[in-house]
Amino acid sequence: MPPERFNRLIGYPLVGRFGLAHSIMAWARCIVWCRSNDASMLSPSWRYLKIGPYLRGERDKRQYTKLFDFTGYHTGLRRAWILATHPRIDASSVVNGWNEGGRRRVVVFRNADTFEEQRRLFQDEIMGHSRLLHQEIRRVTRTCHLPVVPLGRHIAIHVRRGDFNAPASESELSGGGRNRRTPIEWYREMLVGLRSRCQADIPAIVYSDGTDDELQAVLDLPNVIRSPATAAITDLLAIAEADLLLASGSGFSLWGSFLGQVPRICFPGQLLMPTLEGPGGTSLEVACRSATEIPSQSVAHLKQVVDRRSLRSKEWRWQAERNSSCRDWQGGSDTRFGELKRA
Image (cartoon, rainbow, N blue to C red; front, side, top):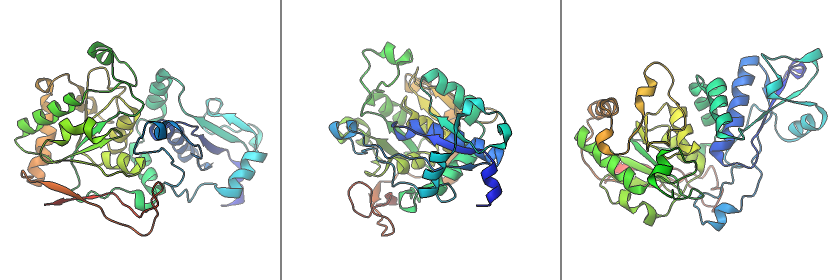
């Protein structure tokens, strides 16, 4: 890296101990700012042990440090030296690359502490940069953790369980209750309704941290499969390849929709915030309590997909594709995202 670059501010995404979707906020803010100001960037660090996923028996243990290759960032000893020798300032103090006295400083980007702050930062700093962020997160993701979906598009169904609690009532969920589980029956009704109006059994993939028993109402439907037990980043990037997302009220659904600009349907009160850019985007981000409420715009969008690919009602199966270039970061086996293939 040219010496003159050290006269500039250096971005530092402080991702903290959050889950992947929440911690992406700090990384995304930093990427956007560094690219806008020709600044270099320190690699983020996810070297934290999270006990909760082990206690709850979740498939994803939320150990993210081996998912990425941060070539092009300051890493290793250089990163440590910069953090040890450079003064730090919060990103809120920096405007348009300001650097008082031309001193070397580290600009710290953090995640949001509250939902209101998350909404503000997302709208003010992230919206409008989906293509940049999608390309960059794919670039830094290790090849063995990139999704392989040869059929391309599909209906993604993201069912959040894990540390999300069941709502005390439907009104709590529709009233905007945070970290609450969307009923599995809702996902089933939405998928059946969409397929009926499109007159096609469009392939669907379930992405979830729940058990097979918790997901059975959806997995029992034809042309529905579950994603394999892969890394969280693999599922996130696979959701970004979908044509439509039946979403949960979590940041994972939000980022999957945003990165791929995927239209989504949510339970009322669980939309969180808009993710689609450009005119008319909000018409494809809707909240429906029942399948009869699915708007014509969402159906028309899926029909275009069906017509374009001439999809027919067929059974699909998973075939795991092994890749010896990377060791699985949880179990030690060589794995890669499964392929959808005709049975």
